Structure formats: structure tokens, C-alpha cells
Image 1 (cartoon, chains in turn cyan, green):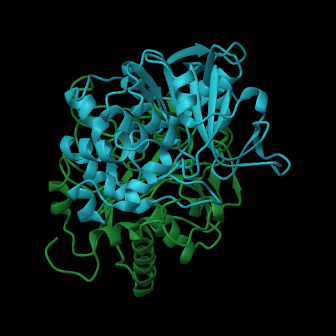
Image 2 (tube, chains in turn orange, green):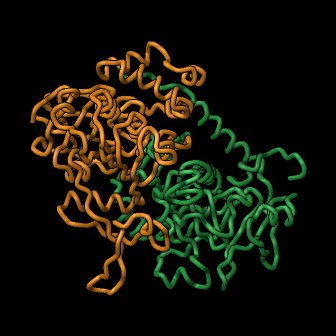
Image 3 (cartoon, one colour):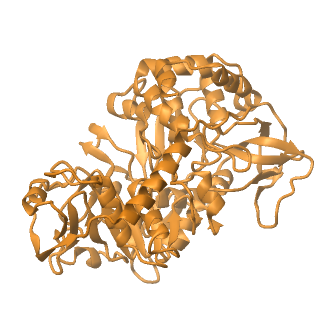
Length: 290
Length: 264
């Protein structure tokens, strides 16, 4: 397992047109990796993520995506993801094909991918219109009871990218706190890239902790603060104020583009990105909200 | 509402929802008003209520309300944190949730809900966040409480999209389809409470808030709303309820408006 800089890892493993999952349920969202993908100008990606959150709002608005598979697409506790909505409602900056599930179905799809099964199964989507708009949601008859159960095809991303608190020198990765779908997304993928807050000699993992062993990790990158404005339990809190500020920044195409140009495209890496935020606001919307 | 009262419609809704929860009940909570109601209940009559958030945080006791479903506050105060496949498969589908809270953009007279899209799905007028945990909460929670402000735009004769099922077309449709939970037992609005009528399972007006007239509630409903045999009046919020709720909101507002230090 090599330790690479984030820009090396993205350059080496992320290609145009791939199916890509950046996971982390509210917690440990790999923002730095998303920004690096934007910097390197990847296109035509099929993005997969249960909650697209700000990271996919930014990548979609920056023109990286042709398709999105998801299960809840809002700014949690705040409102809409305006760039996602603009892509779906108006095709800006490019048309976006969407495939949507409910959380339970998407969790089952990742679990099936990790377990090398063709589909995941649940008692789901009863009485809903979801199967009408997503023809991948289908039904089987239980061979034991005869009842009808819902199926979803396995999710097998080309690349999954996660953020964790800690790795050791061999590349074993420790995550703690809300672990969401991390393990399933990791083991469902062909390539697994992980960014971490710190790299240490001894992982110090408690028994039964969530550890991804080095031999399932393709590359580790040391990116402190790499989950901001989401959070890393034990390192820094979720920046709820920024999630609210984002509503104003992302509402208009122009202020969004200016923010991305200044803070993401105008910086060389994540440390530079964080410095640019500390130095000041790129948009009037951000300034007003701060 | 015709006259000024010392509480807001949101506060009345939150208090009305909190009172429906009981001590020890296991409650699957969404963000926003349900989260405020569940925590108000915990701070008043239901200290041992078990709050489950879909981020896999079980038995949480937050000091401030979370902005997102997965704030650190939830993880830090949880009895146990489980993964997403586990929270949906073992805890929700496993039948361990007494009450699931649901909100939506639209509801029909049988408590079916839309949180996906306004207008045509392929050419939406407004794209909403989508399903999240709602369809399976609606299916598997032993009962659901729906929280939704009442207007002809939200209480509609026909949904643009069915995201989560209530009673289907009523008249036993839900149980014939094999849904394990009992469905929406109550709808808490800013004007009163709706409950399903026994046989038809159509939602009817069961209670109104003080000084809200039945006609006003009918006008705020997009179908001909019928009333239960007797329409109760919900007692207004007590001073204690208002004090605790406002304190909780004030702590929350302060916590969420404070920019977190950048991790540099």
C-alpha cells in the first residue's frame, strides 16, 4: 500500500467516465478529494453517494458528473442543494442523469457489492413510486415463504474514496464515530483511496473498531482537515455555520463559480484551500453570511 | 389565525407532537421539528425516551439540536453507534421502532407522502431532496407521526409522486399489501391534529388548537376534510413547555451560528 500525495492518488487512479463513490454519512466526507478531482478536471463521472451533500453539489456544479446515484439530495437541516437542482431542473452546467433509491435500498446495494452478491434484498419501497422511476428496483418471490421482497442491484464502484481519522505506516486505516456505509463502500470497490487526519506508528485501534486492513486499501494520503466542512470526530467539529453559508454561495451560478474559482481552482492543494478560507471570503454572499 | 398569541404555530406543533410521545418509547427521529419535539419530550415528561437518528446513533441525549442527521453531538451522546446497513436492517426493518416521525412536501387524504418532486418526475418544477429513510420508516415503524403545515398546496387531492406510503387507497389497502407497521396514526399540523377514521382510513380532523376554527382548517385542506364525531381542543403550551423549548432553540441557534475553527 503506497502512501501518495492526494494529487498523485487522484492522478493515478481516478479516470474520466468512471463510477466513483465518495462516501461518509454527514461525518468524514472526503471533501479534499472531491476538490482535487475538480482541480484535475475529471469529466463524465458517474457519482454514487447516499447523501450527495455539499461535496457533490460542488462537483456537479463544476461539471465533473454525467450521472448521479443517490438516496437523499439536500443540504441537511438547511434546504436544497442548489447546484444539484440546477443540473436536474435546467441541465446546468450539463445534463445529469439521476437514479434514486431510498437509504435502506442503497445500503443494501453497497452491502451486496461488498459481499459479491448480484443484488441486495429488503422489505422496501412498499406502495411507493420509486420502482416506477428506477427500473433497477425490482422484486423477487421468497422461495421459503412466497412473499414478495424488493431487490436492488449490487453497487460496485470503480473507485471508492473515504476519509478516516488515522492510518499507520503500513496503511491500516482506523475510523470511529458515525461510520455510515464506509466499510461496505470500501469493500464494494475495485480501487480504495483513503485520506486521513494523521499517520502514526501504532494505530492503537480498540478491539472491534472499524479498521480497513492495508491490503484492501489501494493508497493512503495524509490530508489533515480533509473532511472540512464536514467533520472528523476527535479532530474538529462539523462547521454547521458554513453549511448555512453555502446556501447563499451556491444559490446563484455566478457566486458559486466565483467561490470555486477562488478557493478550489485557485489553490494548489487542501492546505492551500484552508489557508484561502482563513484569508477571506470570495463572494459577497459568503461575506454577508459571515 | 385570528388573534395574536404568545407562542408561534411552530411552537404549538412541536409541543403537540412532544405530548404524543411517551416515556420509554423508541422513536426514529428526523431533523427539524420532529427532533425538537422528541427532545422536548425528553426534557419534560419522557426522560427515558430512546431517540434513534438514521445516522446509526441510538439512544442519543443531545444538549443542542443537531443541524444534520449526523452531527458529532449525536455520536458523542449515543448509547451505541451502528452502521447504516445495521440501523435500517436490524433496528428499523427488525421491528424495534415504536414511533417514526415523517415530514413531506405533500400529503394526500390517506397519509401517503411526497418528498421527491413537485411537477412531472422527468421535468420537475421543483426537485426535492428525495426519499432518504422515509419509505422504510413509513413501512416498518410500529406507527408513524406525520408533521406537516396545513395548506391547500401541501394537503393535496393527488400527490405528484408517492415517496412513502400511508394507507395506500384506504379501506385496508395498507395491511393487504403486507406493511408491518400500522401507518400514520396522527398528523400534527399548525392548526390541529388529523387521525385516520377506523374503516375508510381517511384522515379526518380529530382536534384543533385553541382559537382555530374548523372552517379555517377546512379551507387549508385541498380535499373536502371531514371531522371526527367530536373535535377535541388541544391545550395551549404550558409555560414550562415553552420555556424549555425556547431554551433548547436558543442554545441550538448559538451553537450553529458560531463558525467552527478551521482545521489548520
